[in-house]
Image (cartoon, rainbow, N blue to C red; front, side):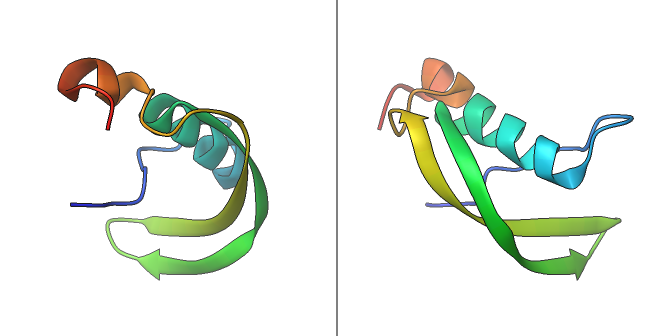
Length: 70
């Protein structure tokens, strides 16, 4: 199963900052956002960004320590 990394936006944090933080926490990758692809009104506003990997390896984020690297 594949899902977008996601999580909440912290107080004072911009959606772009949250997206980059969540990509690192969930995937273990530093990313550069390209643009907002869409927003979805569901339990607040959800943002979906296009991004390119800048550093890190796929599957070595926080969740890989729980489930193992993919």
